[in-house]
Length: 227
Image 1 (spheres, rainbow, N blue to C red):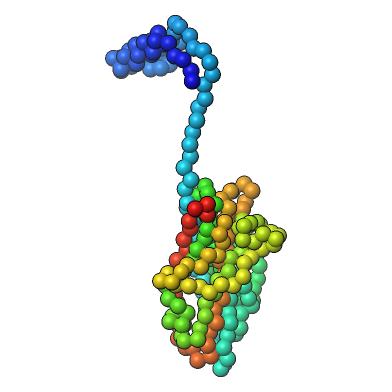
Image 2 (cartoon, rainbow, N blue to C red):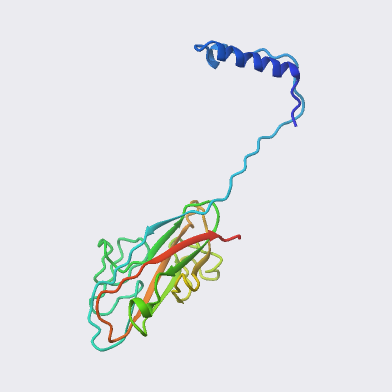
């Protein structure tokens, strides 16, 4: 702790009074202030930054387009060259990779969601669906998700042992009424190195007797992974 003499305190108070009494007086005009007395010892300046959870959805929409099922159950995903005229899957936010009918330049393609951690703590990324697949597609349908690094080693805790852009396994997309699905339990927050982006892939199982346009809303959330 620095010891400050009473003389220093009095001098600083006089300077403050002088500034408040003359509107045109500035710190620059005052020049150097002669201070009697002295200080001894050493001092330290401390700052505390509170951890904050924050994510950004770089991509929050995926579109599989339309196709006929021709009497067979079909499985389509954001990672595949999909059957018929369903839009094909893509990877990350890459606009150069060509996947069949989805060349990366279209606004409506079967791309994964991209989540960026813009906070300053590692977070768990959780996802839930407004409805079960059996409700928004039809009885016998299924919807699944999996996490994958969009930047190498972003989700190190879950994808340890898998180098670079490793990914998790397919998991059922649960509704918020039951339990959220964790797609990454420890998404890094660091911009340097770039390890703060995650992909969320989707896979749908569509029964052969399904017909009509189908859509659902999913919610992506984050919590401090240290909690």
